[in-house]
Image 1 (spheres, rainbow, N blue to C red):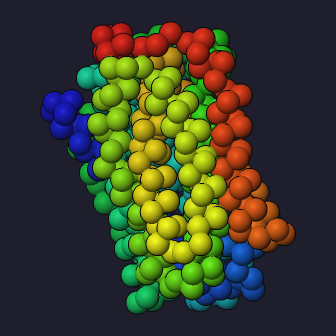
Image 2 (cartoon, helix red, strand yellow; image 1 turned 180 degrees about the horizontal axis):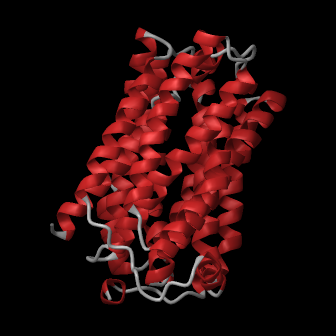
Length: 396
């Protein structure tokens, strides 16, 4: 099987994982009420935070295990299959046995821990392929963007049919992931392994990875913010239903998906610095603008612009992880990136939800976008100290 074919299969795995995840966002306030919650904002916040807290806790475990064993595929298949079961349990168990909402959150944590195995290690398998890290991470980016772009409007329509239907569809998608992951070849480096401790110690010798990790944290913070605060902002401020809210989210994710691959290839040619830094600053400013929009039309235009700018910076940031990590540390390196990203997503949910509840949506958007700009400026010196990668260097 060629690298191009495997790149397409792995991108399909990532697409399905993200599609399943984002199906739940447009009507999350309805979902948590159906599952036994008594509030909208707080319960929605904790429902989303539970999954990403599990991402933080388990991403490093799966990455280190895959590096230490020289295997990725079994963890992807097992994680996806387990996630399928847990998605179905989330939909069925609360009504069948009167499960309290704290029990729902416990299931959500387990589901997140399983899901991150499939997501993070599929991205790591893309890192194992040849052809240029920008190209491989561009494929990951377009899969992420496409899954989220389709998931938002599709999830909104599923909510209009039945509140728990997105959970059942997510379960089916996770089963599909487990099946198609059987087709790929495990290319994890199998030489010079000496256990988990040695793998993590090798990563500690590369502190430069902190630079893409910092930008990953910033970028995912705003994504988490939109997943919760953005959804409720569109619902309440412009009085949109779940279906219309899904379309608003898709205005961001569609350009974010379509432009990631070409922007990833561009970063192989011109380096990572300009796409990451310029993209992060402009991204933060557009986030602020969406929160100040006087009409749904202007807010929608702001979401499109945010998606374009996000597509510029995202694949370059992921490719920088590939540039800096050695072959035998890639699983742990990408897991670290996903840990920082998940912490950022979690912070976007918790901080955004808290600020929105206390001070209102415009202030919350200002905090989220302003944090993106400030942290991008603070991380700039570290990025400038890194050698700009070239296409030949990346390929080698």
